[in-house]
Length: 434
Ligand code: 5AD
Ligand code: SF4
Image (tube, rainbow, N blue to C red; front, side, top):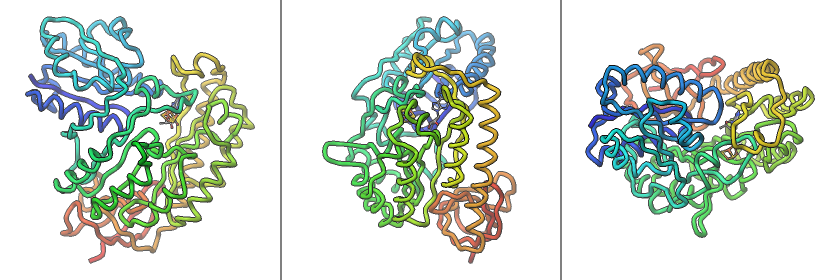
């Protein structure tokens, strides 16, 4: 049986798709990248905001046509949409055959086999113990950089966020299995590992904390670059900063979602820091690791956000000048505390105009940060050939800046020195040094 898998959403979903591939391949399924040849189509989905959800629903309508042409074709939704809507998806999408949540992928082969009787199948349980410890992810990678999930789920219960409901409680993975996966990646020739978790810095296994795990990884695969995301701001400890500083193979980049620059809004979001505390965290990071980059997630139009709250976000962004940010307008998610108890009362047009304002501002800050690299020589991991111009390579430095530079005979996957000549709003342009 041939399966076709399409992935939406965050890096965690990309990693999960690799887990799904591994499980299905091991059970004798064959992967196809041609939708028309598939016997089963799986969409690994995201429900964090309304926009990605709409995109997935539109895609499903298109895929429905294939089912009309090929009667035995099965269609499944896996991932966060599955645990968000559960069996309601069958009511909404009559042509759907399968709904499987993020903790039930090991059951996928069995569930798919049951579809042969034309039953509809669903498994959206969130198993407290499922960590996919012994499954070696497969299939979606570029051969240079690999994601590695060190924990699943989230316990923070930010009032706007659906993740604790779709992915369940926080569960860290056994460090031995993490180290085994790191060594395997190294053996296979990977050059970079990106450690993933909704809050990586909340990692906890028996007595081991995140900074200890990170140090172990850095020592175990000293020739590999290590990145990690996402950090919950108030979990950044001095111990963690010391480890990041000490090991040259750990990237000097922190992804720290601010969400809002107003302490009143942060408290409504049930974030565990005030704006002043966030600023102190940034100060502590920059004192210990001056030449690091800090990126963020910022949201506009959360419940009751006033113009004054929005101005506070602008003020804080101007103070910090993040290297880059992912910015969103708030969308109410059914089931969350904000959906049940708070008023989603900022008009959509205002959410959008505030969003556009912070996007413009962030663009100027990104440019400001990138420009500081002009004239410097950066060590870059070559990740591939530029899609815009095949005379150029692209790669990243240890701060996670994207760099496009002249191509020579250097191998993809090698580290090279690149002189930075100029900058756009998003990318550094340079020339490779001999
Ligand atoms: N609406 C808009 N953005 C959201 N995020 C999470 N939930 C929502 C929501 N309901 C954003 C947050 C988070 C990022 C992954 O997605 O900024 O950090
Ligand atoms: Fe969602 Fe908050 Fe957990 Fe991030 S920390 S996944 S925003 S609940």
